[in-house]
Length: 365
Image (cartoon, rainbow, N blue to C red; front, side, top):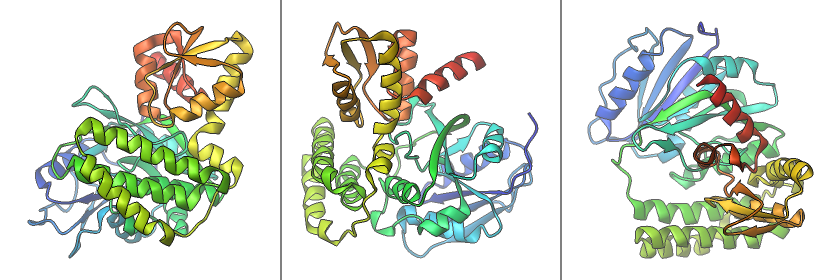
């Protein structure tokens, strides 16, 4: 397929990973010529990266050097520099699209779709990226309309890293837009270990996800959402031996939660945000055909409570083994698709789009 004429900017924040950044720029160059520009925003690296003036394909590169580490909010600066661009392709310094098919996805995106999120694979781990929800994108592989990004205020700098995409997704949904997953937009995330400390990650995750709940959960959902955040990340902290970091994050959350401005989504939008709408649509459809009475939850993960709630609404009993059918127990697209691939057609996803994606990918194989 030839490249589609579309004016885009790749925005890549980086810090102290110059070798990996060079590999990412090389991979972008291998995509071939297209109407684009690359904006690298350096978060005050100890040794600033030495980037070429253009990719091997002729796509120009601009380097912006910051005097302090702005975290994910460095992307805001990249977006501001992308004057005249229609779409911003958000990448990490270790992620890149595998081909140019995604340009067609952007060209065909309806006007109310503000974000096209990618199918993000981890080639070093043989699986997909963990995180995100049906209408929550992941920052290392998503295309965002520049106009809507700027109108929403972009990333909140107080988050640093982690969960900032959830906050932005909620703001975009509240403004009347959609986040759409498209499997033709395929991104490889090489996920190098540099600059990643599990204790810091856990500490940020509990604080930042708590902030998202405080800001955007409707009144009736706020306390359960906060409880779910604390439960989920305590479990991760126990798994990785980071309880002290978890407690530090929890303490910071409790000290700062009162400063978060409430902008709660209405019930309908919150159902889309957390995945309830997608799960109700998919599982109601399956249940109307199969009339199953029990279901085994396969590999429960992020927002497994959504799957359990919808099953309860349908009068279906979740069981550990021996259910009438198997249902993937997560609303996170990557793990959901991996679980479907592992189980094959003997399992169902709590998201119709995931089933459609599995069919599309099988047909393309």
